[in-house]
Length: 258
Image (cartoon, rainbow, N blue to C red; front, side, top):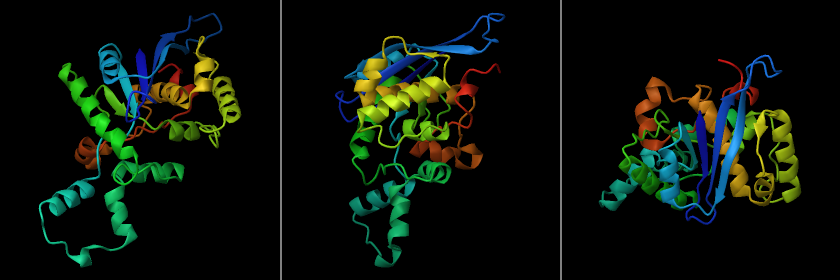
């Protein structure tokens, strides 16, 4: 199996792409049949074309970015743009506005992690989401079916939430190189089966690169059925809004025999 993770930014600068190959360790040699993972490539300054090319050769592609907007937000903007009269009584205050700001999957993320992700409607993430929409179109042009719920090749990934759910401390790692070094060491200690080859220095020097690697790991969770899925009740909504595939197992579960 091959998984890829994209830490998407509004432009190629700040965008990173990681590819991990998963293989079986020889039985009888101390590996117990556990899978092994090798980071085969890690690239910075990535344009859409390379991501679309990569989509054609991997089994699952994880993108760290919202893949859609909240239904309520879309309906509100369309009505407002069309000049429909806005009833002030509809504005129920901040709680009502949060229905426009957050997707259903964002609420699940908050419930599982205790933290709200960035709002695709009201934060700068919106610029990146616009790029993501174009990227999904490029991938679809290659004949690859795109399902924003994560059921197809592409899945939405949230690296920092994945790390927290795996029991790793993420405080300060994005801004502090020393903290990131500690986190990389903790990650590799928890996943001794993961070979990052010569890419550790790039992971250390670039938060984008590190997040892309984590995204590629978390994408494995989705690929083997160990990640949150929207369920039948939320499926149609998830296909419009996108759905974050949060890991439901440990790091070790990524390599345990099925």
